[in-house]
Amino acid sequence: MYLELLPAAIKKTFELLGNSGLVSNFYLAGGTGLALYLGHRYSYDLDFFSLKDFDESAIIQRFSLFNINRDGCKTIS
Image (cartoon, rainbow, N blue to C red; front, side, top):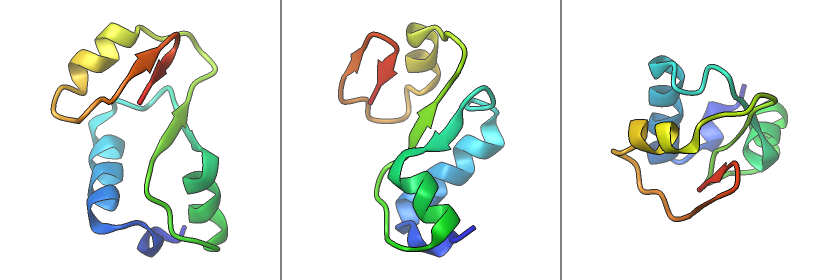
């Protein structure tokens, strides 16, 4: 895994999320997931997906320390 491709703040967030258990039912995908696997580019966001339904309001509440820009049906940004 090419963690050095993440900016320091994103890397810290990634590590905090991994250690917190908040994303245990989610997987990292999108450009960041691919960048960490291939090491081909820098990435500035974290895209987590889940195959299971989840309660958006519970996630938003647990992520209260983070900046949430918008949310929609089964989507939190």
